Image (cartoon, rainbow, N blue to C red; front, side, top):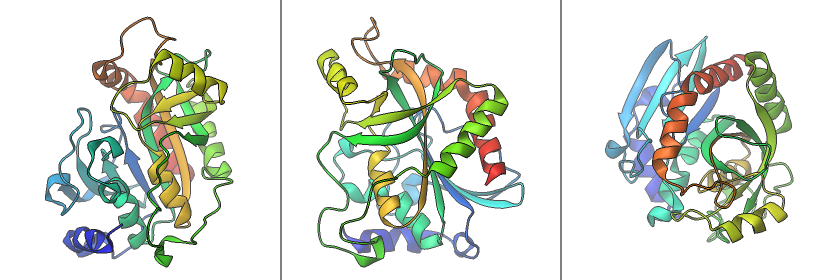
Length: 272
């Protein structure tokens, strides 16, 4: 990846973004954009203004960088993400994580909307990502090694930190939300999966499926960050659902779950 790409983006951000290390960075996926509770917003920048990032192309992604304070903590939120299927390369996909790394941020919470594969899941449930399966066959770390991004061959035995998963479970249980641990299958998109593919992923141990999160998680883990993953089941996957899949269903599920999403993130942040 081109380091100058990240240099330009970081250089655009105001000094306030780097004057104090944030406690956590949050990357908000489809439907999660309104799930923040802020005491004070310090910086707000549209993605379209950040060099190289560009406006979000997916409905349900607000496309904003927000630096804010909540309960005495400084928090960075990326409201929306870029995806591999957009064909713009890896740099925009992992840019939020690289900026967090440059800010010294130790922890990142990655959120997404997913299709439920495990038969116990239903729309509106939350899945705390325990592990993932990269079905894309691509990795943002491919290419010339940059020692700033960790070792050449980073260990991925525990991408999603157990302690952070325990905190998410504690928050969900306190709020009375339906939640389970699960394995997230990452596909490139933008097509939804076929029923045969879903059955293959199920046989491999996947509980949910989606088109994001894994590149950011891999990059953050390689860089030494603590990673948590949280998925909202927005629909049942192909072949499990009898209905045709569409993005409107994803956005509707996010809208319906918004109070729970907001409460869950807020409670989790209070436990860090």
